[in-house]
Length: 273
Image (tube, rainbow, N blue to C red; front, side, top):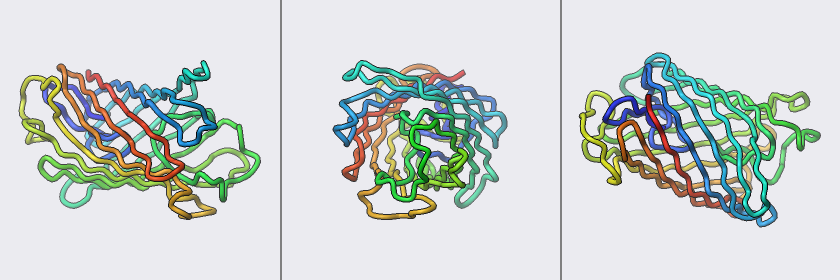
């Protein structure tokens, strides 16, 4: 997601991406993001197309530290059901900034209903191998950590994330799911990061940036890796628009690469203060 406190967009934690984080943090910027997935499950037993929602409020506390709170839920029109599924509290801290890949430490606490559907990240396996028994149906309490490596190269940004999701519930025994996210973004026209940014009017419905993400799971601490088809993997093109002052819209299509992957149309509408 991008911070929006000025006329020209400034890039923040998610940048153009939906899953991948990079090193950019905008100090003293506040952003409200409303994110919606229109999802078609790969498994017909899970029902038909549904809407998954997340609302995120982020604040850049310093030039290195950002924090945000997220709430999420879903609506399943086919079954006539809807549910608020929980919250997340995230913090990111950039260790340095300069040449080479810039490291960022990321920690997030998740308190979620097991029925939650928004894909903030992907990790683990879909075949259940290695998962501790006796926790099915219990509310999830997860510590998610990431190592984020990222750098800007002119109009381009390249970012890599290694994701760990450690189960904090009694009986989990430190069980951890692993995942990854990779992203590349190119800013278009006058829109650049940092000192290269130029003031100008909103661009309407002319794209201001395009990007591509690749993300998925890579097993867990008891069954690392495994067959490719045992995990969800996605490739996702993304386009960003700047239709009005302090407003951004991201649109992405997540194409599943395995038979256990859903199909998603993703939107993210951001407002900056």
